[in-house]
Structures are given as structure tokens and as C-alpha cells.
Length: 93
Image 1 (cartoon, one colour):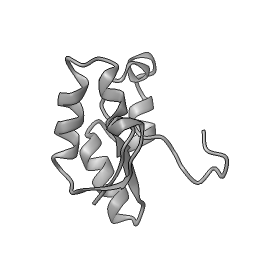
Image 2 (cartoon, one colour):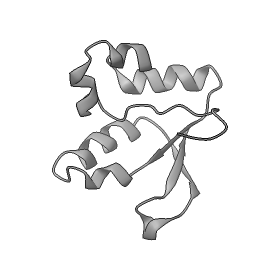
Image 3 (cartoon, helix red, strand yellow):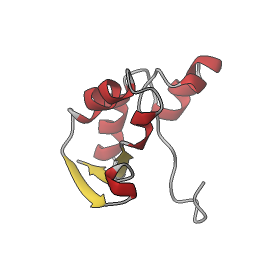
Image 4 (tube, one colour):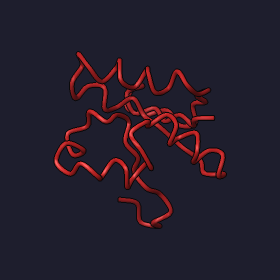
């Protein structure tokens, strides 16, 4: 995904369709079913986590709620502004 291979893509919700296809994938990627707890564990380990609200437009009736439930557990700092606000990137702390 990124040319320098220093990034990995994390889930924003267990609702994401590819986690239904392979039941153990979420466990392998985040270390359990609780995504917020997995993010907190990564932050405690010194990793940096960034999120965008871009995916909200995929299923507008569900994703804004799912992303809000996740991000309510953290402080978000905008680190990049793009796509008229829809591609903004936030660092979670």
C-alpha cells in the first residue's frame, strides 16, 4: 500500500466486510475483537495511529457511527487536510 512498507492498515470496525470472510483475520490484525483496546495497546507500545473519516461515505447509515464509537476513545489531532475535508487525516492519542 505504501512504498516504504512502514505502515500497516488497521480495521476501523469489526463490521468491515473482509473480517466476515476470514473469521480469524481480525484477531491476527488487531489481537482481538475489541478494536479500541487493540489501538490502545499499539499506542502504549509506541506505535502511531492515524485515521481518516473517508470510509464514512461507504455506508453512510453505519460507518459514521462506527468511526465515532472508535474515535471517542481517543484524542484526535488533525495532521493533514485534503479532499475538501473528506480525506483529512488525524493522529490518535
